[in-house]
Length: 94
Image (tube, rainbow, N blue to C red; front, side):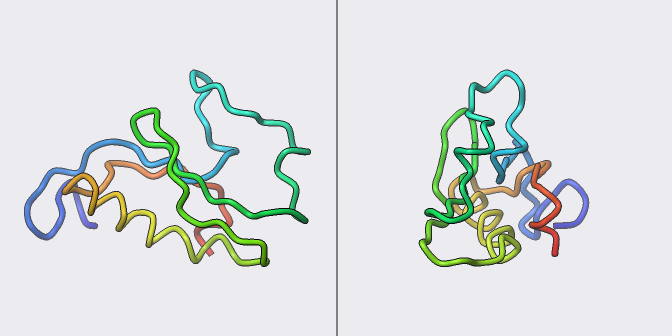
């Protein structure tokens, strides 16, 4: 993902949001920390064009960094290009 194109020359476009704490203000999303309970189901949700997509769901602990690259690749498969930007919490960059 270098520059504004993928390897096939497609322009990068759109935004992939991969964490509840990164939801823009104009999207109604529960920001209550109690709803993001670490001891229940872990859910990675991406928001694209106002639609939520479950990227990973698990009852077992896992590091969120495992989800970032597959989520970006899933975006590419759905849209034929990579997102222009990815909004994610710092944990996804580990």
